[in-house]
Image (cartoon, rainbow over all chains, first blue to last red; front, side, top):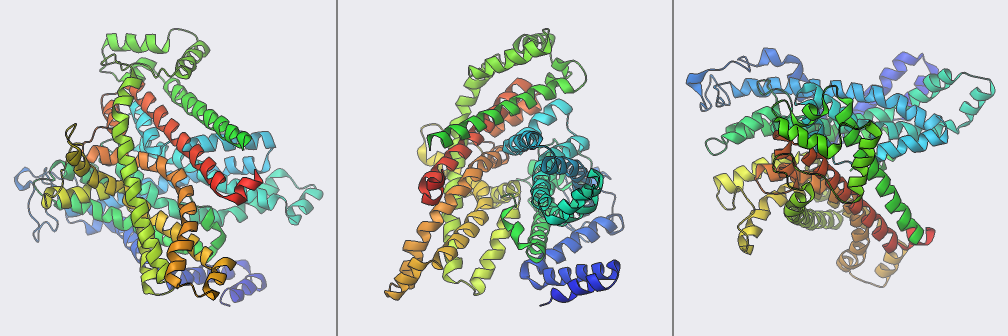
Length: 302
Length: 314
């Protein structure tokens, strides 16, 4: 059993090295499956591209050059240019950074909002729990793209609207997961012992419940990343997301769609990284879930 | 059973009420004149006046809310501020297109999903099973609007096999069917992965049951066991996915309708967003939520009815 050894070390040695050992062993387990190998490779590619984007891109993604409109691929423009003469390769590379920034920021906000809500629903009184669950259910039965469109009418298109929509979309599923975990842990003996010893609410919530909730939450978040990236790209494609001049895969697709009968290249160039990113994060998330918690398989959103 | 159905319907109505409250509340939570928030700064004074009248904006907020909910309960979704036509009439005009599209995508998803799922079970544990597993997860992940764009590019623009825009001329059934193929494929493909995974899991579970062991001991051929007995179990499992799936198919149709410029609920909502026509957006969002909730209730009830284990527990 590969898992038994690190568990013993965690208990025997100090917490830090044990934890690192466990993370590496989990990663090894993720990489050992075909899904995990492909996922890890793609995620690494995406993350590295996003980090080093300005150094990889040969041109400024917003530099307009009227003389070179819709140029064919060449050594100076690897993927050619779009209808404003902007270098497509540079826009795709910088688009990676836009996608990752939007995804991580909205994920962080969503997690920060879902944690207290889920803990309250799981640990609080029953009527509050029932009310919150009803709100979560209603939010998830709202077709998300429709809700996004309604929000855009009122707030106007833009980065903050995109993030808001993603947050409202993600919070119910995270909060529900936290609630389920909280409910199952609440009844355990060590919590009862703490309560018997008159432990404060804060201590129970943060020392006992929180660490138990974080793991499953990260898996769900990882699986969600591809949905979030899709939502941002989709809204930008409709012209309702980030501003048109910002390099984003959705914007590249939108520009490419306008000239699809002249050249297929912009549509292919904008869609391919999007497919690679969504597949990468989904594969990685699935492999991570299988490695960490097979039970969670039933909890994930279809 | 009756109690179960009534409770599901009650829950559905509560969910719709919350959606309506959300749509109503959002308009008022955003600072500024609600008519400008909802219709945009370029709207004419007449349109703002029409919207003020429609929502009763000069009355106290609770009276507005009562007016709004009362109107909805009578099935009145309000009026388009541009054309002054009832929103419900506009929705009913385009709804058949969207429902046809959703049904066609659903057929793609189930047909391809069952084929892939069966193939995985037949080759269980060998490389085709493994490949189908990876493919299924991949299909789930790929954004449907990228599939729409790519299939438009390949089959309509490059190969010129199928029409790129529209829904076909009225009366021309073949033309309509041809116009349906690409958009429905683009929406359905994302669900193939779910269906195949569920079919595979349900069939493998069924293959481990005692009655399958009995069938084997009687010398029934393995293929017959797979296609006649195990597949029957899989249909039930697929049905529960439809519950969530059908609403999702409706959502996916938004992008497909825009990419292929087909008339439909999604295209109508998008056009209303671009022209900042909030009453229409409110109407279509409520309508899609209603459809979504209805599909969920029907699927829940049918699943409960078909599965004797669930039925006896009610």
